[in-house]
Length: 480
Image (cartoon, rainbow, N blue to C red; front, side):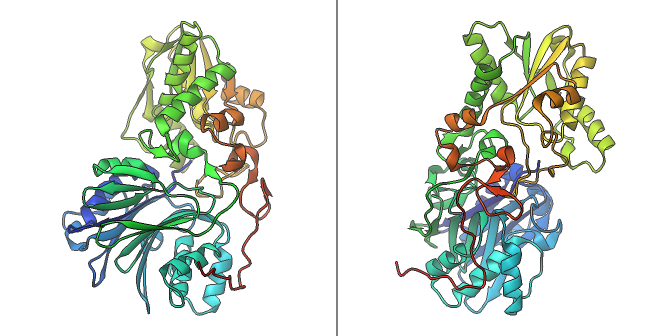
């Protein structure tokens, strides 16, 4: 799996926003490593710098100095829709009759092609194949006829899918969260302004205070002078569709997502994993780094239950090796596991081992990891996963494998256990996820673990009643 994107928007009283945006993008780097960019506005004109690569590579010594203005937005991207090239890097910028527009998008639209085709027929020229440009063009069109709030509402009534957006219309920064809250977005206060961002860890980086999550379907408009913000609840739906994988894997452990500290959620999931499928062994090892909090909770619950199981760091991670998921061939992916993780034999040799991870996708990494532990002398290797089995792809902004590539797509737990050559394998239940997040399953997006989705996706089942916008029909914008 690849991370989704990270977005940020900042309005300050009397200093340039470029450097705080730069620091925020560093805090969100885990959400995307393909490109990074910042767009600012100085009250007269828009300034933009967007490049491929990590934040530290995308910005040189003089780039921030050229981004004038106390208002701006930023973006780190991993491509889930659109090509891997500069034209799809964000923030996306466009100038039109009503001014300048910049847009950063985290998520994925289901009906981007329909809207794009309609706009192309109306004369809009597109420079990329990404859904972000579709949103930008649709919003620009609506801004020709409506004020800012009504224009955003009209666009929200046309786009279908997951999105958290930071937008800049001239010098006004705003944030929008999709009506089901699938993608995270929060607002924070700084000493001299306000910030909208995907994760609260970025607010912490700026020495700010988290105010709250942006509500699903809510628009937040920051005052250009950095003194406050206005909010508008533009769309309301009966149920949310929060992505549970934010808590399981994608968000930083020190972030607060939808009111819950991610680290504590993962520890509680680990405790429930022991309660549901604990197995007696000598040592429990996290797969670094994603399995660490789960393993800590798992070991604590085991010890509370009277087990002598020991928590230990038995796998050392080489942080200078890239992700095994993006290696182009199977042989390279297998070799990358050996380069990335090295066992501490004294912790493993002659012992019954339980390893804890957040997920199994293709199974390649798990197979190699188990063999690595057995080569190091493990007497037994049990595998426990802090999430349900991934049986279907994600259409909402996570670049998962296809159904054919997912090891759990057409195999039972027992068959997967045999394939990865583990001594035992168990996944966490969906009920445990909902209980830990203190929410109903009806308010979560569980498509990747159930095969039923909260959006109308061609060829897929839905888990609720979904009304897909009819593109080509002008929506009715309410007066309020």
